[in-house]
Image 1 (tube, rainbow, N blue to C red):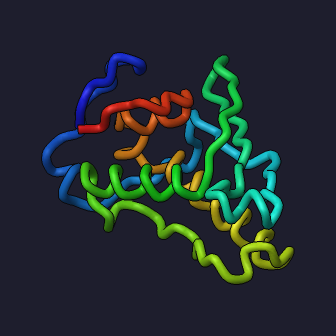
Image 2 (cartoon, helix red, strand yellow):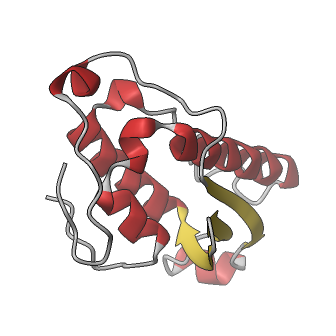
Length: 145
């Protein structure tokens, strides 16, 4: 785990915590929830524009909103997995191309991403990860290595 200049210094977990069972908090200080999303038109989608999710973030007195795409979620998942272990993370929802304009698919994906955020916010190892906090602070150029 690394310290990031955009985030406060957080205590390091013990070596046992890094290789043992992941502790989930029943009452996390962090709340992150998808409040809205935008789906690009078919024309914009073909140019590489993807669905954007607006996420409300609250932690004690700090409140913010960030906009993330599925690509941002995949990048976060990959980099968190490299640092704290993929087995410590919830699974990401399906990000298929076909059907991505179907209302039922979009609703299910949004619900799954919301659950994913809630599980990350309750995961002690994730909460200790500075890169996660930078991601929530919308630091698009954050360095995670």
